[in-house]
Length: 97
Image 1 (cartoon, rainbow, N blue to C red):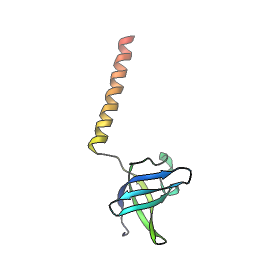
Image 2 (cartoon, helix red, strand yellow):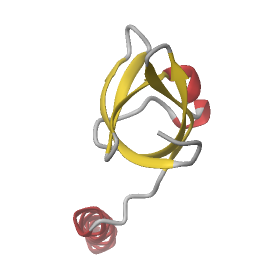
Image 3 (cartoon, one colour):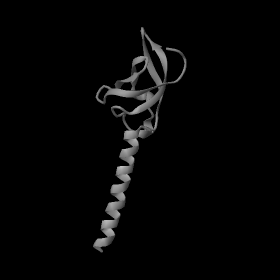
Image 4 (tube, one colour):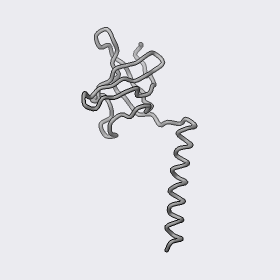
């Protein structure tokens, strides 16, 4: 792995131990919760991220991890569905008055 930014998905995260793994095209990369943005909560499985790596013994560790907005078709469909439910709920509330 070179000194560049990589992209991947959170493969697993153990909240009790404070670490997990990110799956990328280069392979799985270890990360510690202290390298995740603190203001946006704990990592979730399959969450898209970008990160840099440093050597950690004979393996690599992800650092400077940033969340990436999921622009996949499935994510877009989910956002539209959530938005539509919100509109429907508001309309039904207005009709009941």
